[in-house]
Image (cartoon, rainbow, N blue to C red; front, side, top):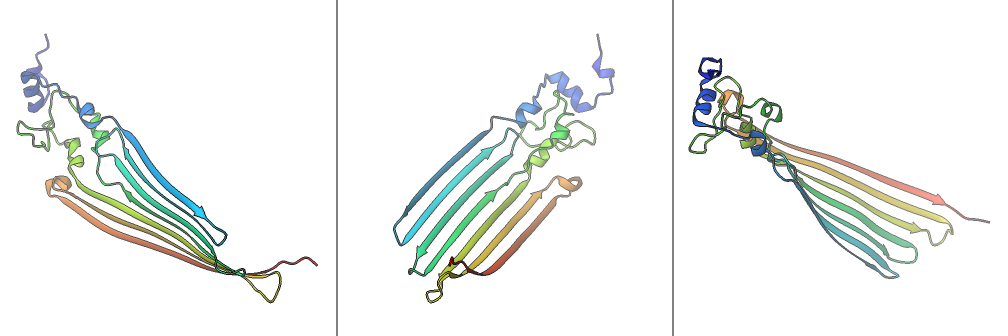
Length: 219
């Protein structure tokens, strides 16, 4: 019979064999995922005005620990005939996205040993459970991680049919887009157990103004 005590296994693995440890790392890191989406909308109008308003919520959970995503959106389209020669309207969409949560290292997970547990008897995570320099893959999953974004897209327009010049039209379009990100991450065990933290903000703005004059008449 093989005498594992004479092998090159590290002490935690030898102890795990002795006490019958059989830990399923992959099962602990994965689970059943889901995709939930809910939406509602309302629309209406008359000879003077029309509107369409909708909202939605999405909740996605992947099969890997902390692989989650949520999204909330709002959309509104409004058109108003102010007079027989003036029409105004807007197309607006807003989205809030949340990618918070850091997943364990899948690459390191495939090299784990089932006779070693990632946690001690008190439930605390063990930094080097294998007895060598390899980090516990679950350390990354312990991060306090925030990754949120929001987006705004808006279009405002006005159309003027010049009353005293048949076929002459002026149209003004104003487009605005905002992409904002707010990211933060902290883990006391990263950076060789010295701890690592990061935080960043990002805002990108874009706008465009179009002034269009057209003349269309058949003689």
